[in-house]
Length: 195
Image (cartoon, rainbow, N blue to C red):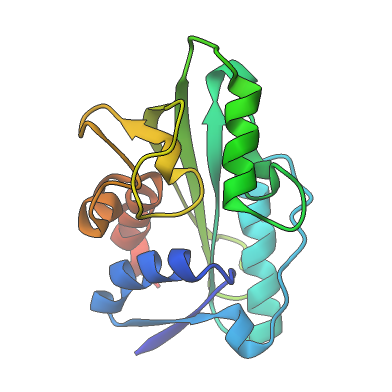
């Protein structure tokens, strides 16, 4: 089994990615299990942050590393919260406070269009000159109040018209297939034989 370090300590993200990669013979090890601290994410783009996280985990582990930088982009807010999605309401990170701030910022704005973005990067080693990069987008709209008990982050507010449900109401298998992260992972998986 091939080992990959996941440059994240998010248990729910780990579960989603593990479900997609385990059948392909990859064992995903969360960086925290190896004593690797979270990397700084100083960049203004998802791709730069994902690269920084993947290189950091690969450098400290000596193993190939996988990183995801993802977030919610709301049209009426000029793309915010964007790369600041996890810390939108400040430190410490809190999904509940982030959701409250998002609803407060949107107010009664009629334009509720939004999309999730996921940038996934896989580096074979810390100085990999040609990292594998995949991107996914998932379009929907922001509801005025949360619905559903599954998922994490902004999932309870993110309504997917094609399913008539929020991301937090979808079953895990469907979400893994159609979400921004699911789409990016399918792109990445198609390129994994090149490893």
